[in-house]
Image (cartoon, rainbow, N blue to C red; front, side, top):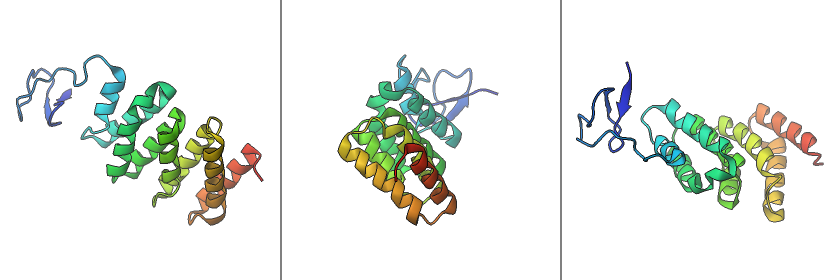
Length: 168
């Protein structure tokens, strides 16, 4: 059975419904024809897998997704789900730019090792396009993770990244 989610209240509705049974809003496309706007809308979807997938798809858009960085930052800061935070961090690594790079660094200090692991992949992507100051911050964070992260897998992957990037 196909379910249509309300663009206003996110209530589940039958596929053939034209208006939301809960709030009465029209069930037309939540963001018109703009693909990026639809993905940003999906960052707040009630299904966790949909939120994660939206973040992943935003990341695949690369620099074209720069207008979505503020929404990604908001999704990261409000998410209790480490899988969503991890997907957001990786997306920001693919997008680049100052605000996205700042979130990648924040993700490297996240309490969840899942997010810290994802931040390593994001750092590897973002470091090549970062300015000198930001690049130094990224290198310092990778070194910090390699030496002092509480998770052995994170330490190991950070050490591998140091070798791949030729950092000593």
